[in-house]
Structures are given as C-alpha cells and as structure tokens.
Length: 512
Ligand SMILES: *Cc1c(COP(=O)(O)O)cnc(C)c1O
Image (tube, rainbow, N blue to C red; front, top):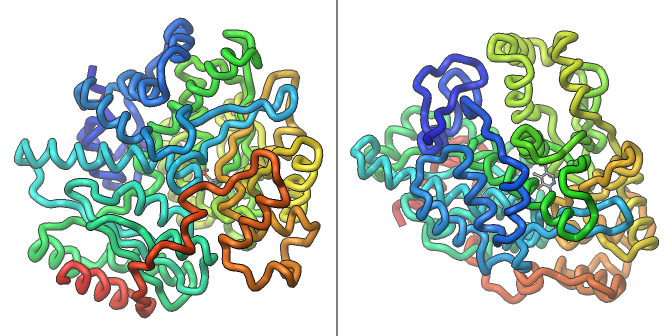
C-alpha cells in the first residue's frame, strides 16, 4: 500500500507519495514531510532480516514505509546503492569493542563517512522519481543540486549524484577552509554531471551565496528557460535521506542478536553523535516500528543545544556562540530534523508555534507533557573538545580500536549514560577522515595546538600513512582516501563569494 506524507506544520494538504515528497524536498510553508502512518515490523520479520544481505534489508524497510516504487525496482536500486562501492559487504557492520558496547560502523561507503548511508541511496530514488513524473507528464525539467559544504557533505553528495540520470550537481566549498584531504576528495570527483568550485571566503559566505542563488527568481527562471533545470538542495531534511537511516538500526539489532550480544527481543540502547538530528531520528522510527530499542542517547559536542534541550525542554540559540570542534559535522545551532520528532510528540499546531518562536526569538520551550514524552525515550549529554580527543586515545590504548572524533563523543556519552542494556554506539566516520585531530589525540596534543613539527609538512595522505603505521592492528586507510595524492585534480576554479560568484560559475559550467 502506498503511504502518503503530511507536513509537520499541517499546512500542506496535497498528501504527496514518497517519490513526490522526495522531489519536493520541503513542504510549502517550511514544514518537513513525515509519513501519515508509521508501519510496524513484527518480531519474526525483524529477525528474518538476518538471513538476507543489507540491500534486501533496506528494501524491506522501504516497502514497509509504502514507497511508491515497484518492489522489483526497489531491489534493483538498493543493489546499486549498497553494492561493490562499499569496502565491507555487510555495509553497516557491528563490532562489540568491549562487553556491552557495540559499535555500528556507518563509514564503509565510498567517502568513508555516515552520509554515504543515505547519499548512496537517495539520489537513485530522486532520479527514479523524476523519471516517473516526466513519464506521467507532470514534470518537464531535470534538477540541478546546489550544495554549500564545509567539507564532508559535499563529497558524499558528489559521489551520490555522480552520473545519476536527470540530475546535475555543483558543490561550493570555502577555498582554504577545508583540509587537504577534503579538498582533494572533491576536486578529483569523477562523473560527467558534476562541478566543484572553491569560494573566496568562509563556509558562511559559501552558504549565503548558495542560498541567495536559490532565492533569486531571475536565476531560477534562466535555469528553467535555457537549460530545463530546477534547483534542489537534496539536504538532510529530505525524507529520501531519512528513510535509508531507519534500515541500519533494524539491521544492527539482528546482527547483535546473531553475534550473541543480545537475546532476541531484549532491549538495547542506542547512542548517536548528533548534529542535524537525522541519524538519531532514524533510531526513533526504528524503535516505533518495533525494533527493541529502549533509550535513545543523544551525544553532543560543545555546541550542545540538543543536550541542553533534552535536559531542560528549552531550545535556545538566542545567545549561543558557535564553537569550533574536532567533530565539525555536529557543529550546529539549528537542528532541523528535531522538528519531525516534535511533530510526533506534540502535533502540527504546537510545531507551528515553536518554529515561529524559534525564528522570531531564537528559542522555544515545549510544554510539560511533551517534555515528559521526550524524557521517556531520550537522554542526552555532551563532551568537550579535549575530552573527545582523550577518549580516542584512551579507547585505543585500552582496546586497540581507533575511532574518529565524532564517534568518540558518542562513546564517551554511552559510557556515562549506559544502564544494564547493551549499547549500540553509532560510529559516523572512519578515523582517516579526520587525520589531523586523530594524530593530536594519539600524540597527546590539545585540540587548539599545532601538530608536532614532524607531521606538519606532510600531505593529508602521508599523515594518514604515519598514523596507520603507528596504530598497526586493524587500522587501514580506505581506498578512496589512500589514492588521493595520485588522482588528477579536475576542478581548480575559485570564484568570488556572493550570489553573482555562484550564479556565474553555474552558468559558465552549464554553457561549457
Ligand atoms: C552528518 C554527521 C553527523 C551528524 O548527523 P545528524 O544526522 O546530522 O545528526 C555526525 N557525524 C558525522 C561524521 C557526520 O557526517
């Protein structure tokens, strides 16, 4: 049966299907799409996932959510999404690192970070959805995805959209504001429908320029008239990025049962390093479907707006300063996907009020009943910069398991908040994505200090080789990172910040 989608602010009454919601992205009025009804997964069907490969596990979750794509086609797309580009055929394996603490590794994809779980999948369904609507005659354009990135999302989006039918993608990054590895990952991207531009400025300049291009009616009209293109952001609030993130929680649970780490039916807790709240929301939906998850542990870094919210019921960014951390993908003030959880706990009228208050005053406070429901399933805590590096060092010394700074935040919070339940600690990046800070952690250098002299002149890849040699054991450098110094750089353009810089770059690229 096809599931319809409604919006968290109750303003869109068009009730789109899955593929329609994916193409729309965000609801008119600013709300986010959520399924009208949440499915349940019977215990025997959950446990039966153990017998099938990851792609089939994901396909079954998609089917349960009433996706309007034929079952056979869902399977073809999942086989593509979770295929040979992953460096572990289990796709999202679980490892019990110490008794009771199980790490879910979400970084075996082509860019070695968690975003691949969704971005290897979503563009396939996006492209499929465009084909379907073009065939029906309800859509005539293709889509241009514009991304402003501080580093990692851009690469994952490029890799996901490369050579996908009906789409093009242009990524803008702050020139000089990303690491050697991050820049090389982007400017060596393969694909005939991709472009990458440095921007003279910082990440905010990039983001503002891309936003201004989105809001420029003339630019949108030119794209449509000259190139038959519409703009899309394909960002993390798109339901098409959320749905793939439910599947790995069901998958992890059955893997834990199979490995003997948990008895079938008994509860686990899940601890997630959280930024935009998409990953942990996947766990919330999995819990609602019947995956035996008891508590959701929300781990923040120093930008702890979420753990403060869970502690107090007040979401407040009115006087909060943005802090640099070694876990930049969690550095966030507005955690967009939280809106979906608030909708499920309190309904559309309350969400409308709170979001208006957030926009106008930079804060909102939920009512007592909502706060009680929130506390009923969720706890939160936060870890500062030096603690997170110390956690990498300590866990490596005690267990030989090397993790990245985002995972370290979750590990530390899991240790503090764990009960007698086994905990699934969600690992969102391979350590090699954040080599410089992992090097600081292992050599005992503070976050805000320079690397020891012997490492400073190395390329990013050379630094990883030094760390891998030092760490020994299972430490390896993922292929996509190891080859970076040898790959040709395809994209060297650097453009001025501001709307004209972005629009000019896009237009020259489309004309070339
Ligand atoms: C995006 C990201 C996160 C945060 O995930 P959310 O879904 O935004 O909460 C955490 N760690 C890494 C490495 C990421 O890339």
